[in-house]
Image 1 (cartoon, rainbow, N blue to C red):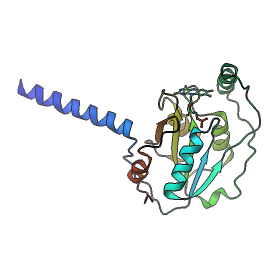
Image 2: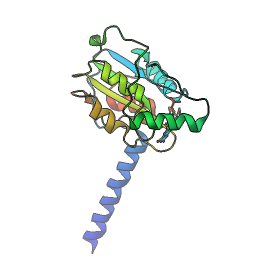
Image 3: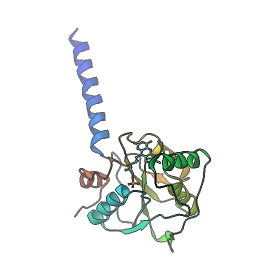
Length: 191
Ligand SMILES: Cc1cc2nc3c(=O)[nH]c(=O)nc-3n(C[C@H](O)[C@H](O)[C@H](O)COP(=O)(O)O)c2cc1C
């Protein structure tokens, strides 16, 4: 009997630790932080931009806003509907912001809002447009309560031959509480 209680307690502790890790944004993987850092992000309503700026303030690196052709309706529902259709159709808008020398970067943070459970078409265009193979890619995702869903898995699948860190940042809205400890868990020296 005692054996089962102990086993149950260990299983419960392991599950609790897993939940803590998921909520607390801690990475089990370390990054070789000697390389040059790019922090690229797409942000429609400003949340992901705030997280990108907070990463930049904590560890430095170059900040880059992904912008693209096209626009969305002002009203929320038509806007989200258009985004849904774009995602379903695999739409890749033409980028309007440009990085001159992607080769100089070893570590590329890529920030995306969670749109319909995945990354945005603009972020997919960014991944398609630059040679990121061989680089370490660190995802950071903001969401409206759905959490990570398929965002990091889809980024990993789209970013061929990149080393995508699986424990990316996943934060509600523009929340940055715990961001510095997440960066430390990746191995960065944080200001
Ligand atoms: C088109 C669209 C789809 C969204 N879909 C989801 C979703 O599936 N799950 C979720 O948690 N949040 C969803 N959200 C909420 C955003 O992920 C959240 O507000 C995010 O922080 C916005 O980032 P931004 O301000 O950088 O654009 C969606 C928002 C929009 C505009």
